[in-house]
Length: 91
Image (tube, rainbow, N blue to C red):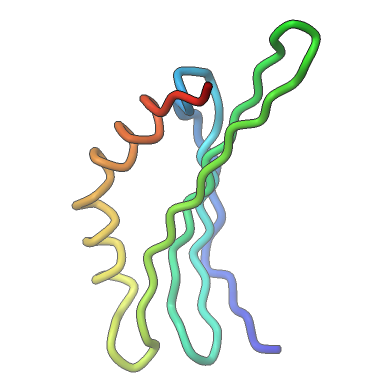
């Protein structure tokens, strides 16, 4: 299986109103180019551990899209995605 990883990165992020992390993976295979952002945090409440996670993926056909186009799309949606991920509430 062909899978080429171009970059991995991890930064702090607000996930569901809690401190957490955003991990970024930039990769490609024979068919797609992809940028994946994984958000995660955990909270201990009443002796129970809750894990909040979300995945955002920007992808396109290897013949039709470049990583620069995917980065542009990601930059365009960054504020919206960060706001949505930080303000979600789970009951």
